[in-house]
Length: 236
Image 1 (cartoon, rainbow, N blue to C red):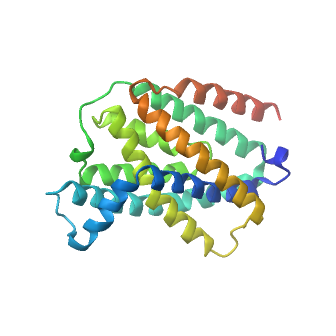
Image 2: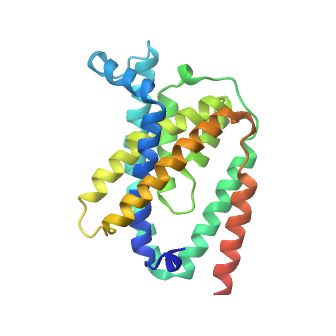
């Protein structure tokens, strides 16, 4: 894909981070009422208070974002270095996609927990697993949704929580990586065009996925695409 766009693997990796800004905006717009409710509750928030829905969500988002940064940053740097090795990098992407697909397949059974049932343990575990999505080919929404379902959440709640936790995590990544020396910044037109495209796609995707939450199955797609990438890398 990088060669098709006329950019190298490292620049493509950097561009992929900025593209998430469009997805972040789409989640903010779609779940604007939820985020507005959380913003209003911040002034009365106390760490460890799980009596109200807003407090539970704020604690969950704080913990998951913190753990995502701790786990995700070294993984991102490793992926950035691995991008220099061409076929090896492509092979890792294929293996990651296959792992994502298998995770989806193994967690098809839905639970009964809802957003109001989120707790501290969920925040810690989801933060770690979301950090691994810093590696290209690992679907952030795929692995987080799978783990939430595995922990007993119903499909719609798992998807919504996955989208909600993406906002602070992506925002932190955008701000943090922008100030790190040596981080490649794509051209303005690449960022603006990509963000607009990801925003529109994000709005449509969120709406569709939440409507068919009990029928979301893209594990087979991940496995097929991952296998193609893996086989192609071995033939290079």
